[in-house]
Image (cartoon, rainbow, N blue to C red; front, side, top):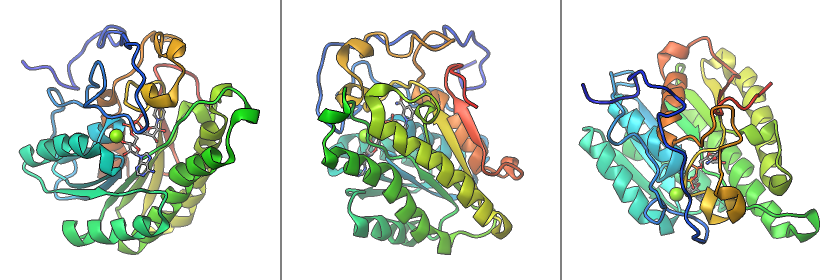
Length: 298
Ligand code: NAD
Ligand code: MG
């Protein structure tokens, strides 16, 4: 039998600890340049029509967690639109091929989420090309480490807030008029919302904001039949980390501080998003699924 997300394995050894090479790459990192490449479930994710004919929009769906979610959604029967930065075209084309090989429609939306107008345009374009919208995954994110508040430029704080929080707000606001009862919104938060690293002052702040936004919006939209939830990843091997997300000395043992003892792979995140997007989670609202390798969350 071929290996899939349903295969029983020892989770400790399911993936080897990543050996990060001494390689500095600029933002945004790409999977094309990532050594070793991340696992988005290309060889393993098995779908079973849990999202048949749903229409999904995933920001940052070109790489990392977003790419794994895009592939899983397509194999569960959804048509998928992804946003990404123009520099990430190669990664986006890889995901497009995966979606189309699953027999579903792929819509590619390159652009910068810190541009206010792009946030609304991308929603309209996704709706037009998909023929509607049932699932919104706010997943794009910016993470740049900085040792000290004195060295943290005002512009970086603004850019991180803009990418992680304001874009989520603008895209969600633009999407809501299209969402029918049964639709779902899933936001990618982080264990950083609960255990903020001193190196990630701006980033951790945005992740705590995403948590509050998720819970408040879930209450607001509950009676309209639109469910809002979040997924909180722990340390996951994606292009975000070696492109300024972590200092190099930390990257060498990235994820080993978790109880499970290794970093996670994007493929290990996808089932949580599929559950929250599917009708199976009809009574789950304002919740956060922690996929943290055992790092405690409240
Ligand atoms: P990733 O680099 O693969 O994905 C992040 C994506 O964000 C990029 O692909 C890019 O397309 C998009 N993005 C960033 N800035 C943008 C901008 N200005 N305009 C348009 N798009 C932009 O990395 P990932 O780790 O898969 O990140 C996905 C989400 O997971 C992020 O929200 C991140 O904060 C969160 N997260 C990651 C980890 C981890 O350890 N990797 C842990 C917790 C949370
Ligand atoms: Mg990317």
